[in-house]
Image 1 (cartoon, rainbow, N blue to C red):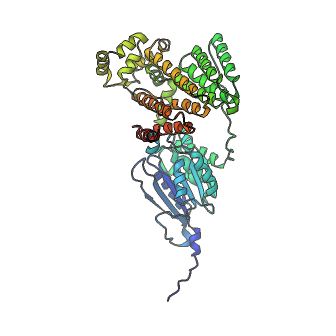
Image 2 (cartoon, rainbow, N blue to C red):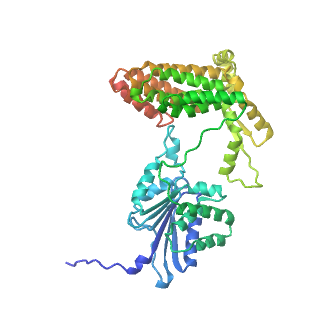
Image 3 (cartoon, one colour):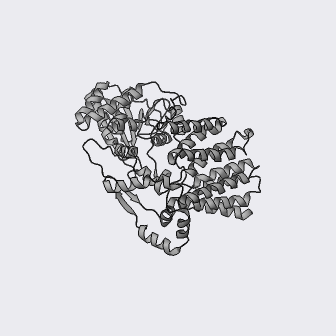
Length: 509
């Protein structure tokens, strides 16, 4: 029988630097790879780059792979793909790509420098879930700190955008700043200049990322927090705002922490008197709460009462669509440069219920009760409208609608929202002294959100969840079932998971 003996590793293999990049479509992974090849060859290295594309844009990351070695050592033989446990530098153009790199074994504590952008480019599976389907980036960050030999992380996408470039330039700067490649900074910058496209912006993004990569890392939880919101306006209104904030700050600390942003939200939505109503409603809940449970009921109520009071109606939607900061944000996302014209088309599709909801409460109720009138409104508005808000007429129309805050309290929609809010709070408090169940019912208000069809679906799920809660309210595990029903309702748009949860309850009730 022939015995196989281990052969000593070729010492030349130790001189090969192996670098992988994970990026999705539009992030410039090919450009980044080209720069890396250029800087290596310009500094006396032989280099080879390969790439394997994902399934399609935004559904699979492309794996770019570069190997390089000093050319003076002869003609090297390079590999075509990275192997688990055999990568020196791993660059991830998005946080979850860093997680996938670790799962595939490309990141090891013995040798890998991991460079990752902390921003998220959400996967389709994260977007379709009606609840919060976004994966937890903190878990990936914690794992990266333990798995990699060295971990460099920053929002390189934001750095690039602020400097008029794309993330590939920022990642290139982070690579240079990491010192993982044996080339000076000037060599990296020369590779960018030699490309001849978008040089100025790319160099700015490169420099910002270089500094971020070399700066000391700030420990989690020690970042500087934003200061208090500054109130401006007539002295009487500013004084009233300070009086309201003083009321919120006087609440128990766990409640005040949530009540202050809630107060800002409802005042911005309507006015100062509306903010006083918010604190009054919160005070009713606090009167039934106790410190023994850490005021969890009032804390959750502070959040969801604010959400319920700041509902999305036609006025709110029109107001948001005509704000200057929204145009600035869209222009930044589209990377509009000086001299470019941006055309912006808004799709407005209010249902008949939204139109009737804008009418005075009594008239609107009569219209909603009339199939004939609702049919007319549906025919008039069902096709929706495309409004070019970069034009004066469409912008003026939406701006006019957005300025109807003074009319909101008279509308049918407001009367309906107030009635729903009061019924929901009464139901939640009605479950006391089953404290945990009351808290879970308060949290169920997160099911109601959005505008038009989204709002209608949320209301339907909310009603079905609360109906399910009544079936199990007498059980010791009622709070747990309320949580399960709410989470099931958030799993999918159609409500199939909720149907299953309700069927389970009916099977043993």
